[in-house]
Length: 385
Ligand SMILES: *Cc1c(COP(=O)(O)O)cnc(C)c1O
Image 1 (cartoon, rainbow, N blue to C red):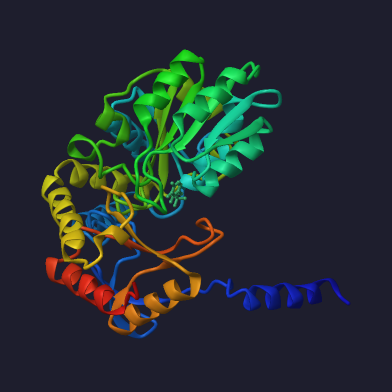
Image 2 (image 1 turned 90 degrees about the vertical axis):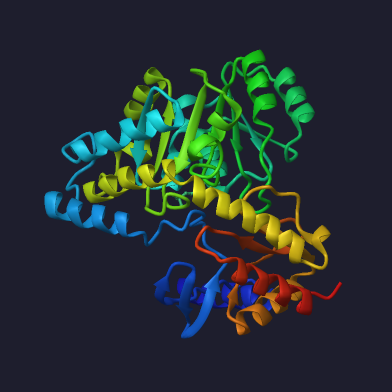
């Protein structure tokens, strides 16, 4: 048997378990209204929480950026791929989230897979919430530090692990808003432990940047946390509606990451037009109180319209999962909704624990009350309780 023929069996196993993933193709987008696989639908899958992804101000910034800079950065940042547009975006982002400095990366995946190894290594220890995003897990593994995973949100369990650890350097890693549950990490308590045990605290605010805190300044500002031991990660492809990500913190630690983070050093800089667009997005986020109010109103509306609101998981953020339980039931429900033009992803194990398959509804300022009402009505009709 040739090496590639082993894939036949692997694919057959995926198919048998109902776990083969497929992509759906969007051919038109007007806010949350899309044409997906040739069907008109309202998109409740996207992380575009403020509805900025197709905002005219971002389109204009991208066009102006292209006219000024052309397309590619041409090299990595430390060679010749660093432009004044990147610099301006870094200063603007740092200032916006209340940190001294920021470093712009091409994606959140690259921030998360690159920074732990710059801060800890063999013999050290990383303490990670069990529900953290996959990119944080990969970054911890790449660091070669010991990886200790604590039960989701369990501050007491983390405290015990920290107290038992003899590692010379410790790093606590957490999502702020958990991507499949929508709940928020106990950041003040985690910060208190980081202080007490002299650990770094790395907060991945992928789903909080633009959404949480005054003017959407994110999770640290939401809780008023500021310290040289805290690193803040924001991603720019979600509420900001663009692409990219950044890490922000104290000037010295950010300077260190520029020296050591391999996913920053060994990759081409993001196109400068992307950096221009990010600056425009920060302005829209800062002025976006009405958009955040609209999302908050839709979150309340969804639970008020569902016949079984107790099926909603405990989330105050735009990520509103409806617990279904059984894998097949979740898939069937998602398929029925899509037939009615309501596009919601069914999330199954291994992405979430066995027996907790769910619909993961993402609400956005791009949605109307009528669209959310239609979604709730369809769920009421199809969800077998
Ligand atoms: C989306 C996401 C990332 C990855 O960010 P990208 O910019 O899309 O690579 C990292 N962490 C969390 C929690 C996310 O949800």
